[in-house]
Image 1 (cartoon, helix red, strand yellow):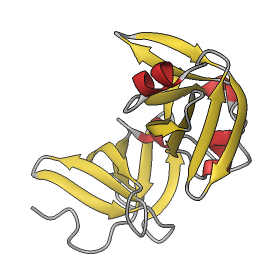
Image 2 (cartoon, rainbow, N blue to C red):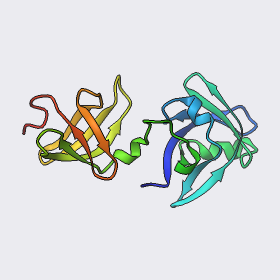
Image 3 (tube, helix red, strand yellow):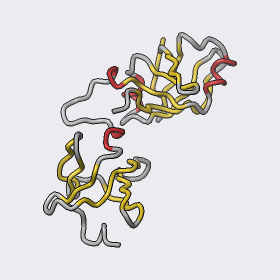
Image 4 (cartoon, rainbow, N blue to C red):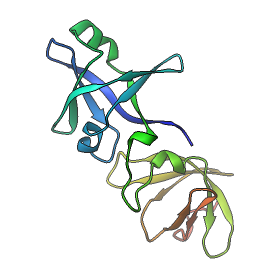
Amino acid sequence: MKKYLECGTVINTHGVRGAVKVYSLCNSPKRLAEIPRVYYSVLGDYRKLTPMSAGVYKDTVIFVFEEITDFESAISLKGKTLYADRDDIALDEGEYFLADLIGLAVIDDRTGEKYGTVENVNTGGAQTLYEIRTESGIKLMPAVDEFVKRIDFEKAVYVTPCEGLFDI
């Protein structure tokens, strides 16, 4: 499992004193604003940013970081992905990190047939979709209880797909 998980993207500066506006990749901007420290990557090296303040504004978070004290430093973060250490995020009962689904086998809950593997989780639309790599290409399956029966994070996502979803 990955130690550092994507949690946001710096989309712009905010003001002239070093604040940045971050688009949340968490389940809510409020959740992102509660993370005690975030990181950005420079050539695979994770560098820490410590929030002095974080406030939700519409669907973004405005951060003021201890390490970023001026406009020039803030502008250098624009476009960067922010990461959270998984140990810094407490999950409630039944919650999990979407990143932990990547690479899991997708298996029919009734027959045991393996359909493919989870390649990505798309949260950008009206509902979450699992992108499943099969022998015939990528298939999209809604991540709803009707289809996803259970998840074993050591082995697989067990599903009961709609008819024809995994047909070639």
